[in-house]
Length: 94
Image (cartoon, rainbow, N blue to C red; front, top):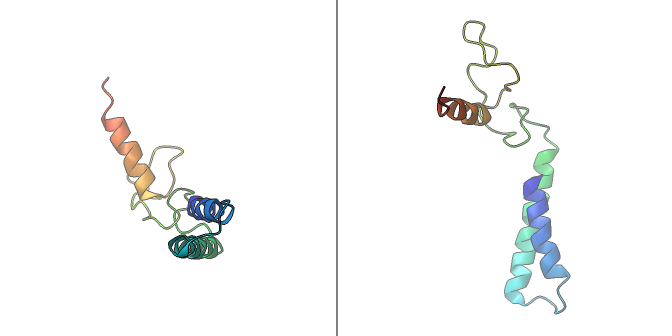
């Protein structure tokens, strides 16, 4: 959703400027609208395998669902988010 919002902000800035867009600005406007459309279309595919809002198309943590080495409570399927959590807990000192 962030990609859609960012692309639409760019398009809005150009489209609602006081002056009509120049040739270069028109190209940036078209590019921003294409990015917004592509990002919006990808949203219709569903939340992705990870179920993560930040990394919906990211990798699934191989330890998710492992009965021998379970993930801590509250951790999801997203490998990227879980790796960030792992690094954060390693950095803490008792």
